[in-house]
Length: 421
Image 1 (cartoon, one colour):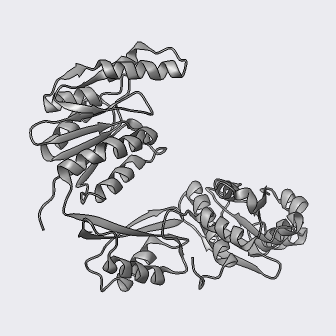
Image 2 (image 1 turned 90 degrees about the horizontal axis):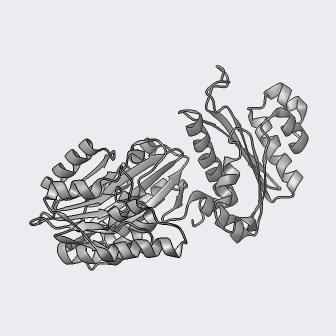
Image 3 (image 1 turned 90 degrees about the vertical axis):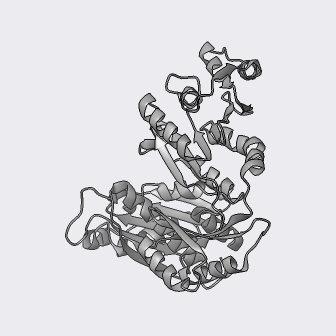
């Protein structure tokens, strides 16, 4: 197979190296490249400080045929991408009056006085081109040193994504499109471990050596992608379809989506299609289940109420949990989880009820009831299912995994797993 161009991505921003930000731009760009038969060979994340940024960019330019960067194009002192790319490529910058007019017009439309430092964004490569930004002030920059293409894109997704579609993809189509492309299918699972998914897929896909499998584990979820190289004009591929069907059958009943539907969306769809409403009683998850459900637009059609009954007196008063159960079994118990589910259903008149009680930590655990122990109960008019689960990780991870587990247990309770997703 002919070797394709070397493609790299550098994500610029100190905030991307911390615990609070996820780089979604990389996913967007990687997906777009697949459609052209291109794949990233390397992705680097670097702080917006002069020396590490200079080293990373100069080394990437030396290696790559196509280098894309995200971030660092704004007007502040830590926005260094433009100048350092100029230094690394040896291509000077020139002042572009059209960009200045666009920046001034954007501030005028918003009736905001423009700080003069915004005009640093009007400097563009002398040898190359620039992309207009219809949703921000920083244009995309294209440096074209000998035999290479260096593209600097703004970091905010609402600016990057339209620029990608309108300007960058046509340019890449012209310069780098391959005879083959990568076609992918996905599966999303909940309430299972990454090791179980891996072992299950190894058996199910043993006859599909030509299909590449990749996984991403996050608290409570494992996402799976199946990929295969196909002729660029192919819209479907029978081998990939067969592998996807085999993987889905093997992972059932834990697959909640094979597209962009999230787990709360899948739960909501089932409730909506059944014409039923849900109420939730939460203790250890502290309202996170209700928050997840109501993130879905239109959830008022099926989400009736959520009660965060954290203290025992709240369980007694609002859910009618018998005091004897709390005394005999403790708040963290299957008996109390069942009483919470039945209680919130009776109090609200919901068709389905979901309840959680557990020990998220870091303290409060014992040998009999360790940190990470959670009881999840789901009930309707005829039955109540209680599941005991044990989660590792810190407090936040335990809570996130409990939310995913509770929603998945509810999903399967509403519609038996033998039925179609």
